[in-house]
Image (tube, rainbow, N blue to C red; front, side):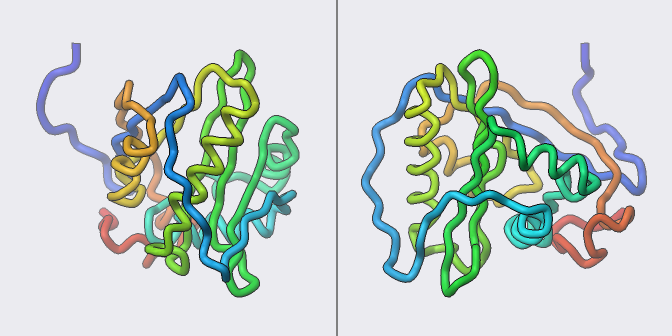
Length: 196
């Protein structure tokens, strides 16, 4: 049995609280239209495209780094997986959102990655993108749609997922090497989480 209290995180490491959420039925959704200057499309990602967008969406502000640690061959294998679908929102000719759905065996679909760059925050694009994620997942006749978020994500993420119809079911703590000390991310990334 785990004791209550504080637990030391070793120097050079980061700790996050991961919350897992799921939905078992398609929720009711309010129709959202994209602003005229933003377009939605499915993409066949390259490693370079993915690394750039992944970093701009979550790496610099929120300390997303899991995919950035992977070598190109490992990441390319994930990107080429026929059970994965990738989408983006484009504004002024630049891709500014990442939506990755992973259709898994047994009828599950994971919302593997979801996020917007600062260029789209506050435009309603996030709600539109989530509606697309929910629609595309449930149109595949799944039995469960699930997502994981953590304390290294936007403070609005957990509430947004709950308002979208996901229900929390599990919480875990993950400890890993600080990606700013290993060179995966620049040392000045995610200033709200100090390097120790």
